[in-house]
Length: 241
Image (cartoon, rainbow, N blue to C red):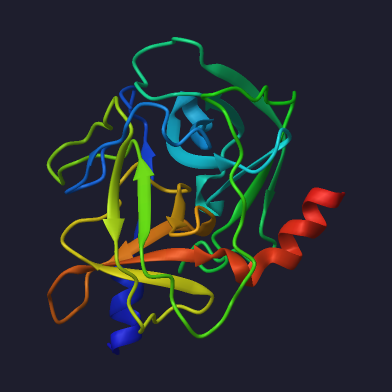
């Protein structure tokens, strides 16, 4: 079995299925409440009554971005959330239509990006705001990035965190998957953080939290983020429709 096949076998989607609690980022810390007003808590209804939890982020009053592997039968988008166990001032909006990338590969999580058209417009406030997308794609990597989400904090914990967590990540030069950014380490996004944004030093979203894999030779996990600048044409086309 070659290395590429081994990597495919060890890839993990960072999605939490069938859990009623909402996981924290491993090694992170609690975000200042409502300091990331673009964050979206996404709940998808799956077959047989199961639910799937993901992150996402608000692009404008009509659209949310998340990962394509967060697809479900139907969706509920929660905006203005910090503590998922509290309902103080949050907006709950259903999704009118989902637009997963047409070339999404569920086996290897390629083109793992999706847009959700909201059924009604988001109402902007101090706790609900959109985030701009990075549009530059050059050879240089962003130097300082943050990932945030409600994903689990420990591998042994099957529940998500009630409070929004965040962690600084450093992107690495070598990334096996095309159209992706990567970071590496024992700390990073975990199950439940799929679809959240990789936000870098200029405050724009550069990536979408997608998947992680453990190198066959051992060592820290490698985390993949869909590289938003490489999808700007596709994003703009969908949103203009």
